[in-house]
Amino acid sequence: MHIGRLTAVPALDRPDLLAAPVAAALAALDGKIDASDVGVAEIDPAMADTAAFCEEYDVAPGESANCVVVAGRRDGQTRLAACMVLATTRADVNGLVKRELDVRKASFAPMDQAVELTGMEYGGITPIGLPADWPVYVDAAVAAAQRVVIGSGIRRSKLTLPGAALASLPGAAVLASLGR
Image 1 (tube, rainbow, N blue to C red):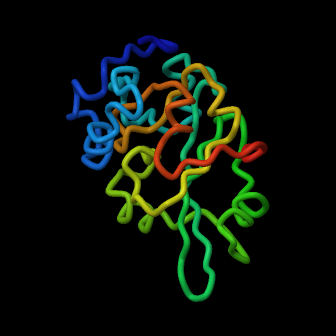
Image 2 (cartoon, rainbow, N blue to C red):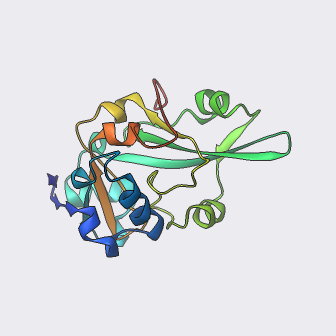
């Protein structure tokens, strides 16, 4: 599997390049999504942030999808969700996401909270392996992408997979215009 200057191998062949929750989720999803079509590539962790990654590895921003963790409160309870949008867009947090979460205000979850609750590294958070009760909102452009690059749960690698695989994750909902 090649994308840009990345060469990926089947992700389940390299669990050392995956955060523990990601490896466990991929193993559990095998058969529900084609795990053999999910690749992992080792990268320089200093280049994990989207702009630096795309430039360093010659991956177009339209082939890279970001996972942002969003939080909102309702009736004294925090509601969390993951949003997958192409790197060329930004998640409509205070419009569409706020309505989907049914909260008065939504914002990016604090970094320490996102890291603690996901068991993943900041800058590598991915929708695969998130807590089961979190919805995963996938922008329609991400779902339609032939292949995208996303986080692996750690900063020293990236996953590559068809956008349709993200749309088929448990708890996933494809939303038109999530990315703006």
